[in-house]
Amino acid sequence: MSEQTLLNTLQAVNQSASFNRWAGFQVTHAAAGEAELRMDWRKDDMGQYSGYLHAGLIGAMLDTACGYAAATVAGRVLASNFSVNCLAPTVGRSFVARGRVVKAGRKQVFASAELYAEQDGGELLLVATGNAILVPVEPQGVPISGA
Amino acid sequence: MSEQTLLNTLQAVNQSASFNRWAGFQVTHAAAGEAELRMDWRKDDMGQYSGYLHAGLIGAMLDTACGYAAATVAGRVLASNFSVNCLAPTVGRSFVARGRVVKAGRKQVFASAELYAEQDGGELLLVATGNAILVPVEPQGVPISGA
Amino acid sequence: MSEQTLLNTLQAVNQSASFNRWAGFQVTHAAAGEAELRMDWRKDDMGQYSGYLHAGLIGAMLDTACGYAAATVAGRVLASNFSVNCLAPTVGRSFVARGRVVKAGRKQVFASAELYAEQDGGELLLVATGNAILVPVEPQGVPISGA
Amino acid sequence: MSEQTLLNTLQAVNQSASFNRWAGFQVTHAAAGEAELRMDWRKDDMGQYSGYLHAGLIGAMLDTACGYAAATVAGRVLASNFSVNCLAPTVGRSFVARGRVVKAGRKQVFASAELYAEQDGGELLLVATGNAILVPVEPQGVPISGA
Image 1 (cartoon, each protein chain N blue to C red):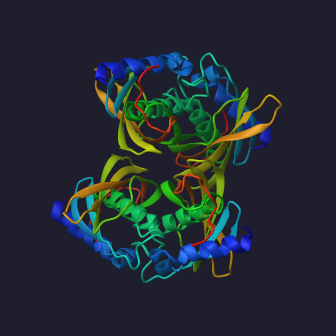
Image 2: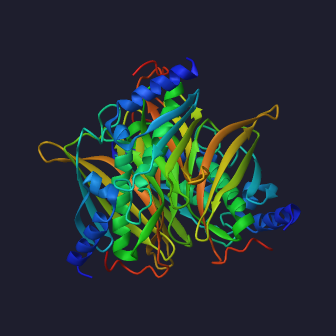
Image 3: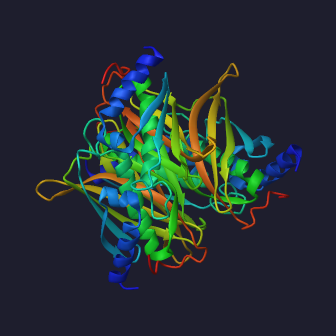
């Protein structure tokens, strides 16, 4: 499957999830074992009590980037475990999550992701990291081939 | 501090977070080392691609319940790490997260939480578990005393 | 299977692992979804640089207690993920790990465990907690029935 | 501090830990934010029930590599949390763990590590990954300067 087809497929999957539409997730890159996700900051419904990006959204971006990276090699998956390290206050005008597959097994896919906060000058600062274990929904682990 | 004061304080903190207001988080119980959180399901902006509750919201509820439990003994805290186990498809009309402090140290507070999906008959099914490490913002670790 | 049979079976599995024999692991309790493990402290080959129990042994006890708890319901399993929270300095004359199954699925078993340090007076202090995800080796997930 | 001094210091710390001496850990590389650890396989006291490297030793190597990487920038540290993904059966004649600091804060150091199994031909296969949170023992977080 070409990278363009992968990207189109992930974008369609992404649009089918109501939370992702609400959050404004955009799939900006896909390749075998890789996916990138972008989200613009909105202070009116994305903040925690200090005004930083809420940890739930940090986890959502990292988990989703891991899931999409896994989907490029294993088809439809569900997260069974994910963990997040919050490294720095998550302040930025946009956030970018980059996920990649560490190991794709038949029963489980291990993936990792980094979350970057885009600063006013466009610089990307690493603000969080995550790991996820994804379980293929279809036992064959066929790559995604449609929404 | 009485449990009613703890509850009032956590409810005020909760209302000060824009994501929590959007998600409709309600703090329904607080005691020393304990907190309970409730959220009603909305299919139009809370789902992942299969229509289950999005993993980001699973993580948000677990992390927030851990954070509020920690706040009852350590004051304002920030999550530095959280991990989530997704045990079962998260389908329900409401979700309840119960957090508790496992160990409160000076530098770190360890907390755990369970997430339950409320079924149509009112039954609570365990659907996810989580752990979090919270770091007190104030070095003294004073309990919360106001919003 | 009776609890005595479960215990005998886990003890036989335990003796078949060379690391467990070296560490002196003893299986002291087994029931459906539960297992308890005990280890005596030896300062000559179990310490980290400050003289506490080495984190590797903390993890080994927690992971093994989770694995044995899982084995009581799912047969032979392999750990795919485990995480450990070190709550307090691990000093004691003996250590006891108690594992239990949180959720047993067909593809994955989720388990948790606590590690206690036995003090000179016999008191048990909680020093660490752990979580593990175990994958059944046999797809059927048959309970253990022999070493 | 020069890399040779860092290496000498970590080797001295390593020799001061009785478990590390028993396991035969060797510190083979150190630089600012990095450390590498090596261990030879011994089937007589390092195996789990199937004859693979015991998960406790997988965790011990990953956690130690993370801790040594953290020590190069933050001085003496204690692990408060570590997590391990077991990607493949851990079979090899030797094992190599490579740790690096992801983010060094004043209160917490985040580190990651990979574990490789050396095959008969010398090839290194990735068999496990790990993450750790280390807490500096001295509040100043001074780099290690002696055993």
